[in-house]
Length: 114
Length: 114
Image 1 (cartoon, rainbow over the protein chains, first blue to last red):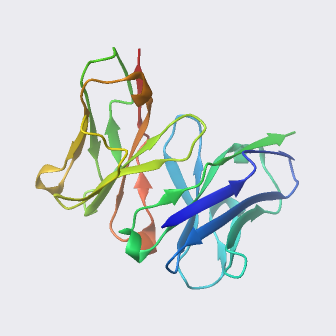
Image 2: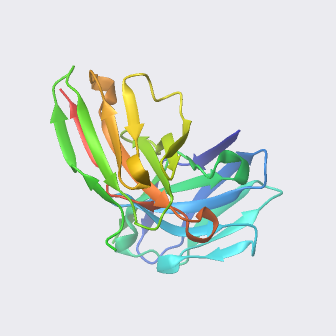
Image 3: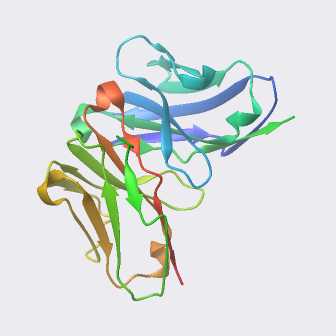
């Protein structure tokens, strides 16, 4: 069984400040981990993924995430927030034994203040 | 290729009516997934196909729900005797290789049952 917990359903940051979104996972098999972004009334867009290669993963739009097995975490960061980063972000876990289906966290909505 | 296409984008229906949604995946993708997303929540897995075979169904998929993928191309999701609790965004995604590419999501169909 797999599960994802995203700490904080809402995060407010000032433009130019660090964005940090927390994700902890549980998986009985080596996990594949993903971050997706969703804008209002849109589908989900892949930001980045971890698939057992480098533990520090760089994605689109300046985001990156670090896989820490000992902490079962995959937190998402961006050094400097931009107004266009306002959206909802979802962490997801999958694995070979899961039939490649994704299990999502509850999401974190990011508000960027000017 | 224009990505994953879902139709309609919005559907309002009266309780008790049947509705059908369509998903056209990226043409070379052999896997197709349906997810349901309620307000303020992450997407929840419903079912997936590899080519035309439906390989897994979630317990969320009651007997009022049925999905098909004839000929391994487009897919339909039908909900019979809709209930207000069925109101949600229904997301379709396709994948050729989860590890390399992740999923590509469509923009979703928002269902409102009144």
